[in-house]
Structure formats: C-alpha cells, structure tokens
Length: 96
Image: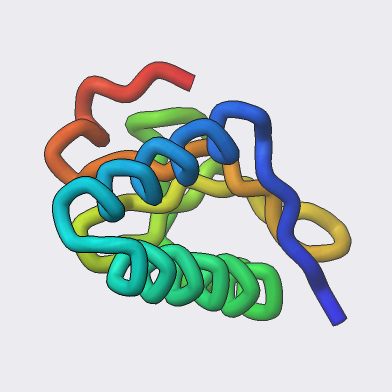
C-alpha cells in the first residue's frame, strides 16, 4: 500500500488550516475537514496521477484541488510527498 509523507511546510500549513477552522467553524468541523484532507492525501498516494501537472510551480510537481485548498505534491516510488497545502487564491503566488 502506498503512503504519503508531509514536508515540514505542509505540516505547518495543515496545522494553520486546522486552527483557523476551529476559530471560524468549531472543533468538530475543523476535525472533519482535516480528516477529509488526510483521506485525500491517501487517495493521492494510491493514485499519484490523479492530480494535474503544475509546471508553473516546478517540473514534476502535481496539484489537486480539495475544497478551498490546493494540494501540491510530488509522486514518489512509494506514494507521494505532500509539499504544500495552500488556499486556492494563493496558489499563483506560491514559491516552493
């Protein structure tokens, strides 16, 4: 079974999304959103080419839209490396 790994940057962004979710929508909704996102990470690990190429970010990087956020990742031999999780409005300004 393939798996996903998170960069430190992605971990920090997920925490920020979670804390914002608690503040805006409550603990229950924030947990649901985080769990759903983690499920999406696993789907990407199992089907790495599910996302689209993101050559405007870097060669070999792929992107997948998940609700309000864009997941940027790199396929690996055993799954995917999640590089960043950014709000959809911020993806064009992103620097990896």
